[in-house]
Length: 198
Image (cartoon, rainbow, N blue to C red; front, top):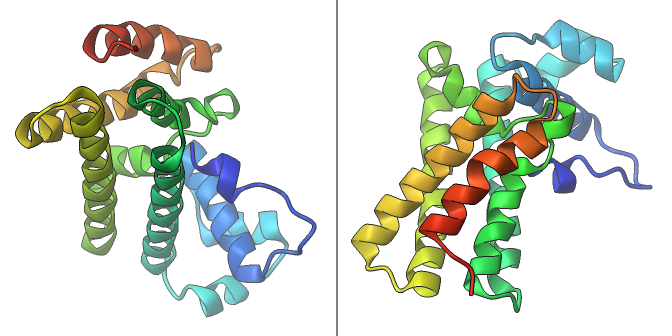
């Protein structure tokens, strides 16, 4: 999803903090919260665990920072979609495409993976997740109200339903070898019925 922007390789060397966050993000998006440790990050980045603790004293602090960064990147991408000259139906499809991105590499939305682990997440991470969901739903509701002339109440309901559908579809297609195409088969017919293009 947001990985196309956050994980993009560049000629500028990444700071240790960025390397830690990028690696943690990759692990959460592919394994979930409980299935990675500082030892995994240490091995992948090539630094000692003590160095990770220097930047992020606890796993809770690391993942809180990760969710904030992910939210900021996602909202920046959403703003670029909204400011494009595309029609509202195309903007909606561009938004949906963000949830397709990464599926072929086994990378799901960071926050969808964390929500699947909600029962074991510390309250601080749960609060960051809530802020992420509220921000994305608000952006999506605004798009639906503008593009489809929905009243605010219906726009809010539809945005919640669509975001839940996208997260659920990612989890559902994960077990299939052709997960990006399986995602399309699940989402596109619903999208065409619910929010037809021009």
